[in-house]
Amino acid sequence: MQLLTPSKQVTKTTTCICPAHVKTKLLVRSKSSQKSTTTVMLGGQRTAEKTTMSYVTFNGDLTPRAKQQLTTTELIKRAEKLDYYLQLAYGYAKQIEDMAPIATVSSPLVQHAWECRRHVVPPPFRASPEFTHMQYTAVRTQDPINFSRDGYVLRVKECGNDVKVFVTITMYNEPASQLESTLVGLAKGIAYMCEQHGYDYWQHVVISIVADGRSKINPSMLTYLS
Image (cartoon, rainbow, N blue to C red; front, side, top):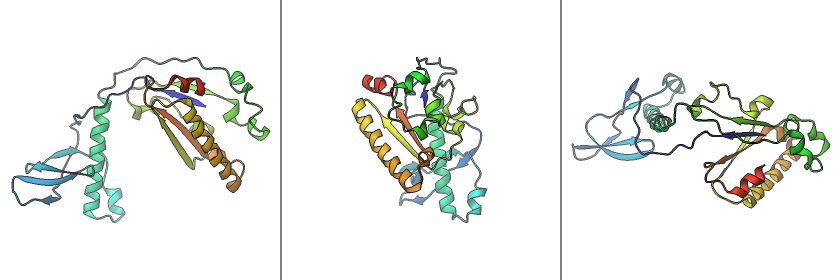
């Protein structure tokens, strides 16, 4: 088990400024009957812009996509979509402090955490690292994209398991009973997978719980997760 606690919740904003390193011209898709406006596609949304050329940053090389024999329209559409999300990511990153303080938490010992659960876990699984080791990581990074570069490693990578199914559970302020019912349903689904593909197939499944900020989470949820 690995608990990842973000240092600070990022407040979304509608405006962002892109880095002026490499720029790609936003090509016109279709023109209207008037000469003063032009309809363009950006991030899957159709917007009306002036005839003056718009510029957006582009991060990447079109050569790999070109080798896939994609049409020019498809290449431009993919480039515009990448540009759109790059602008959003850069805008969010600018709001993060240079180095936020580390959030601390009291983590129980492995023996204490699993003592009351040994009667639930069958003997074949008690010797696996998932049941013998527990880890808490206080993440301190300026940008989430620097997670690996700053020396952090996810638990699933440390175990060396080949991930085939990744399930993400998002929660806001729901009570613990709802999360419990969700996890019980997932456990039954994983048990069915083990019946079909082997008893150790559960090692190929990863379940990630993502909370929308520490201040929004239900107190009963923290008690349940502990």
